[in-house]
Structures are given as structure tokens and as C-alpha cells.
Image (cartoon, rainbow, N blue to C red; front, top):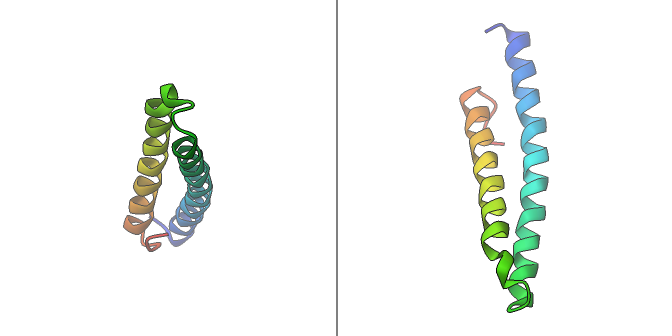
Length: 74
């Protein structure tokens, strides 16, 4: 991989991590709000939790990819 390509990859991953981090925070807050309002909305617990889990899984994956690309942990 050339220096420019590696740099581009690292920048792309950093931007992706920033976006995923923001999305994960939104999911976290939705889950938090749902927990505070229980028992109202209890039917959505699994869906909200699954969405939150998936967003944090994607974030962890992107951070690992950045680390592997030599860009640190993000």
C-alpha cells in the first residue's frame, strides 16, 4: 500500500468512526430514555437494544480496522 493510499484509508476510517460514534451515542440515548420510561414502550426493548448493540459492534470493528491500518484506536 502506498503512503497516499494508506493516508486516504486512515482518513476514511477516522471519518467513518466519527459518524458511527455519533450514531452509537444516539442509540445509547434512545435505550436510556426507553429504560427511564418503563414500563411504557417495553415492547420495543429488544429492537432498541439490538440496534444499540449493532451500532457499537460496527464502531468497535471500525476502530479495530483503523488500528490495523496504523491509525491508532480512534
